Image 1 (cartoon, rainbow, N blue to C red):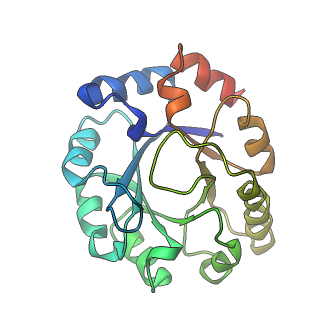
Image 2 (cartoon, rainbow, N blue to C red):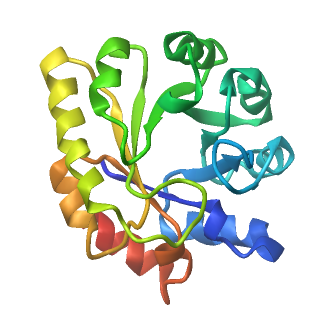
Length: 214
């Protein structure tokens, strides 16, 4: 079943608790939690403290996207803070296989994220070691960007790769997702859609999620 994961980066930071509750009531499945270090991406966002508070409220499972260099340094801390899914960038670590096993050893689902210009070929060598492949359809670092359409084809490529190998994993898409392009992404094989500005700024969040899932 398709999952919708609101990106906390697009929330009203003065009302984060209320915003998470609003997304839960609107029918969201996960909470997408973007962690940025100002090095791997040109921005700084949230750390473990806010995650611990969000996860402690037990409203939505926390899907943590680490846009940081050498993510292996912080896997245990984010897992302890309450992450259910931890995704690292293939471009950010020299030892992807090791990091994925590190995430699973902490009791979390392990994800691999690919920037728009990164080939999905790197996933071939860790098939079976991850539970989620995250296709970035914008260059990470800022919300509200327009979708990079050339990255959309990777969704189908990854879906075909997983099916050929007999491996089950979620295919998540993050970047510029809205009601208009959601059917295209789902048709390519996406099973989790991260929605930021389009969802949080929608007049009716519940109607947005119903529309996407329909």
